[in-house]
Image (cartoon, rainbow, N blue to C red; front, side, top):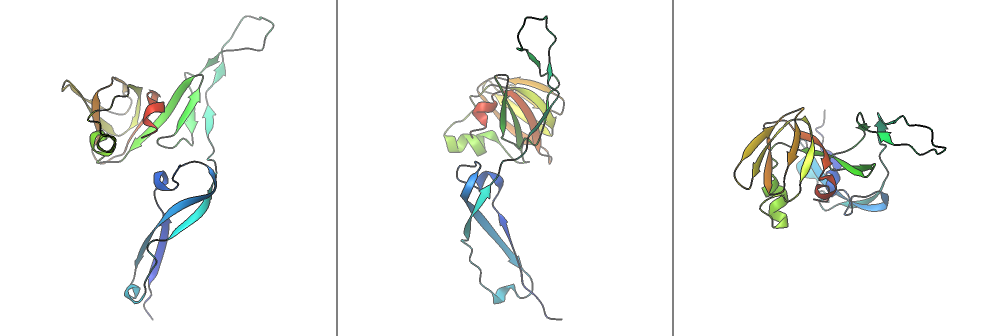
Length: 188
């Protein structure tokens, strides 16, 4: 049986897929190449491949919003109860504005450190965004400018003031939902 060379092409990670990372047609996407097999050395590959793609909207499902009861006032206006709201289809770094509140889902891989991965490229030592949210999974450490440290775990509610560093603890990705600070951090 003859040996074979295999090649796989996959798009770059989602954040780097499009220069604007937005929905549209004919968006430039970066491609990365990997190849192997016993005969791979018999071939050369274009390692600077680029292509265009149509990036389509991802479905977002919102559940758990109900209208609050009210006394009849001859209008159809109502206030919404979002205490049990859940989102399905929201990706890490995406934000949704609901009733004037910007809600975001943050997801960071093991080894991620704010001061290294966000602060250094931005020329900042500490994050100056205030965050209020809930830890969904994974663990993170937080160090304030005064040296105070805390560890956040699944189910923890948090309020972190400006002037902090944070990092993922352990081998599990850290995921949190942000109710304050999402509109600022999602741009990094």
